[in-house]
Each structure stands twice: as C-alpha cells, then as structure tokens.
Image (cartoon, rainbow, N blue to C red; front, side, top):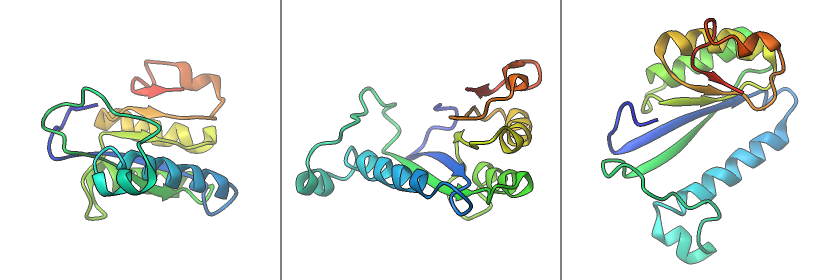
Length: 142
C-alpha cells in the first residue's frame, strides 16, 4: 500500500451510509478511533491500547488515516466520492487504497476508475462474479 510514502497513509472508505447502512458508519468510526490509538498516545492512555496494533509500518509513515464517504446507493456518486479520495479533490491527502462499495452496481464502476489509477480496492459485500475478472478489474480484491 505504500506506493506514495509520506507522513500520512490515507485509506478511503465509502458505502451507502446515508441510504441504508448507518451501522457501517458506526463500525468505520470505531475502527478509525482504534487506529488512531496507534499514533496518538493520549488516546491510548485514556482508552487503552489499540485492538488492532500496526506493526512494522514503513518508517516514513507517521500516521494512517481513514477517510469516510458515501455513495448514497448510486454508482455516479460512488465514483465521484472515489475520485475525490484518489485525487485529493476534497483538500485531503490522496488515498492509496479504497474500501467499498457494498453493492456490485457501485463497486464495478469504481473498480474501473481505481484500476486506471492503480489504486487497490477491497469490497466487502459486492457479489457479481464479473468482479473476479482480473483483466477487467486488476486492482480489485473481494
């Protein structure tokens, strides 16, 4: 994942947060909070050590951040969110990986754009068998 090493390693997470899956948002927020315990000692002191400890991180990476976005359940919005993440169009550090979407109808067009940018994408619940085609989606993991 460290194709662009620097002070921050950003990962973009998107889903239909606003449409159907508010519980996914809660999981992402909890994961982000736990992840921050690895890099912000005051949080670990107050709330305990991280559940997921990051070992052997590249020495140039000082922080791993999660960026959260939504697709509103629509492919065009999912692609727009992914492009904002990958290009840093929202003023944040461009991401080096994507997690989402949860539906194949959103995952497939995002995977096409991510493939062109050579950004790996993990989709946790997209089920289309077409997503296993590594020629069409070379950077997509299910």
